[in-house]
Image (cartoon, rainbow, N blue to C red; front, side, top):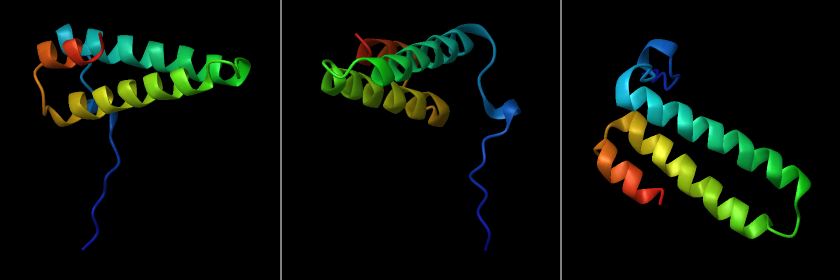
Length: 75
């Protein structure tokens, strides 16, 4: 049996509050990745934050948490 785990654009929340969170998280993720390339002094802190953002994106995609719980996780 072939399981396809590819996320298509239609499956990504693109509107409303879910879309806002998705865009916010991806924006922050990009900033963190850029900072990781430039800043060795804060590497551990940046990696920890990147894990938090990635976990939040995973939960948003799986609808495991409400958006309020997701927002609280990030603060």
